[in-house]
Image 1: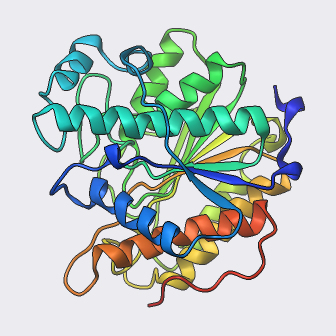
Image 2: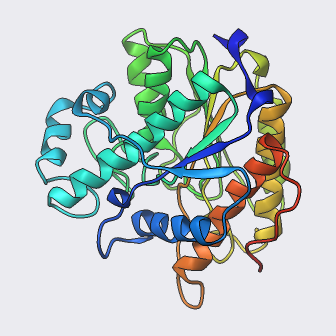
Length: 314
């Protein structure tokens, strides 16, 4: 499928979001999507547009997760945020955003995003770490069903993507191959053993950017990748749940590194929010401003937008 890439022709970048993503009173994992949507509406990043996605279906979710677990969540029980219909609406909407972004870049090339988070800790038959359904693997599985041969999940959340690793392994047991993970974390939460299809490194602040670059450089034959799904967590940031020394400048350098690497190989890429948390004087709007950096750097690289004001400061 990689012969059909069309990244160089992109002029508009879709950002998928719906108010259905939000659960009233929810933790930052869900609530911050609305803050970021407000920022992007009041002060748009040139070339981007917010698009309401069609929600995922039960069939989409059970392509990866246990049917009994899925039905329990969809019936208002077992989600990570609340035990009611609002939670079911939210997880279907946020997963739908990932799926619509995947479909968009596979069809048109370039970059698209969804303001989805709470994904990479979710396992086959249970939620974990504020994650109910693993939209990363559901999106990758959808890409394989649409003809992609190789999908890379790049996880730069502060925490390890143990749920993603487990689900990729289970798909491989069903002879559904082609999905791999590169994971650079600053916390051992949800740590897992490396495998041929999932490579994890846990690092400190001083070698954070170097390790990410090394991990990207170590990917074999990157030009054969049909799709990158980027879990762009802001929780490595020193004020958003991460390590002292990983400041806003480091985060912007990271985002530039990822998108420039992907664009250099003409790779379609989907980005989602992942972690990043408020606390003390660091507000939910401050967290949203960090996530806006991902949108800005994606637009700079994929749309050649050159005049973007800094959206967050240390």
